[in-house]
Length: 104
Ligand code: SF4
Image (tube, rainbow, N blue to C red; front, side, top):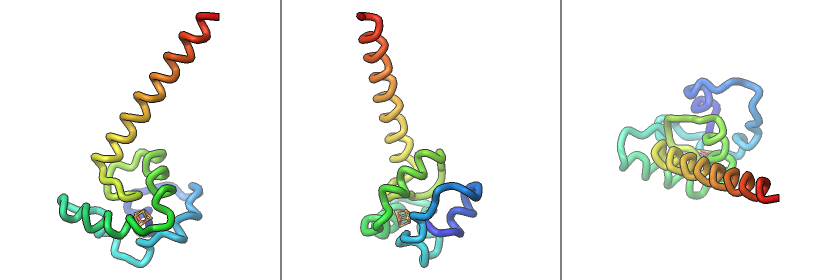
């Protein structure tokens, strides 16, 4: 993720983004990571696949609820799926914890 991409997303300054210094996309045109079709997503994924900060990038996009572009090798749709899955998991754990608490 590069600075231009960050600005394009309108992200606030002051976020923990030191990992971005190691981003493979730093020297690439941001447009690559805002593809218009599935073929473009595959091109972006190709770059992300070998990026040393892929995990941080994906978590950042999930935490910041970034809707557009490929981040951490995941498209918008994939990130929505991951977020939904995590919410379902959290709900399941909370329900389980609540039940365990009331059984005491
Ligand atoms: S994972 Fe992809 S979008 Fe994220 S920093 Fe690396 S190259 Fe850029």
